Figure 1 (cartoon, rainbow, N blue to C red):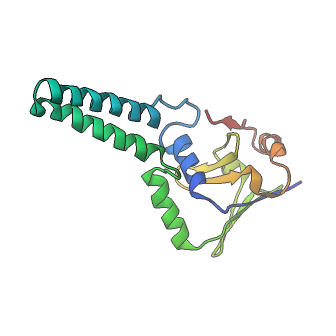
Figure 2: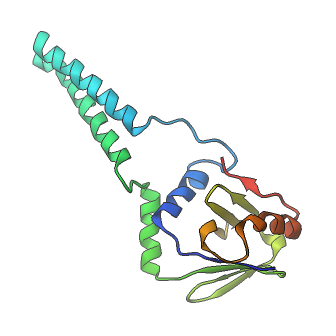
Figure 3: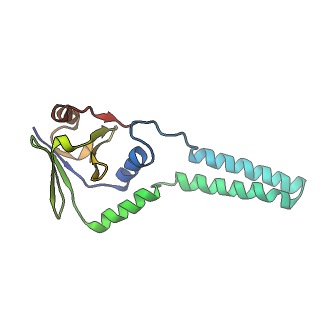
Amino acid sequence: MEFEISLDYTIEDLEAYWQAFVRKKPGTPAQKQASPRMHRNAGLVFLTLGALIWILIAPLAALPELIVGGLLLYSGWYLGRPGAASRWAQKNWKKLQESGRLYQCRFTEDGVWVHDSKSDHRYNYETLEALWEDTNCFYLVLSRRLGSYILRKERFTAGAPEDLPGWWEERTGKPVGRVL
């Protein structure tokens, strides 16, 4: 049995990678963050408080509340806008588009082959560091020095994605990690 995966990344793939591997360690849960809705609600509270201070006390005393309220409203819009992605994902998406490389990954009996428009690379199973999984993707970690590949489950052209963890464990003796 072999597995073949097309590596046509989207910016959403890079954002998922950012959330799972760059921003935190893959086996640890994400830190809690204020949602865009929470930013907007806090902004409205500060603007209301600033308006009351403006009316009842003095216009200059209300400026800090009005500024903070405006900034929170803006950050709520910015974080919640459609297609919002981290700067890291946007920068790497731009690099990927400029490179023009098309990738394909193949798991064979001998190892993992990664093909792009300019070269082919073969990695033995013993040299690979880890395979991580979330609901939509596998993340193949070659090593810290060589990097990683995002393997979308929907882009498997040969082999079934649900069979890959067993194949991996059989070849490497390493369990498939779960991205939290």
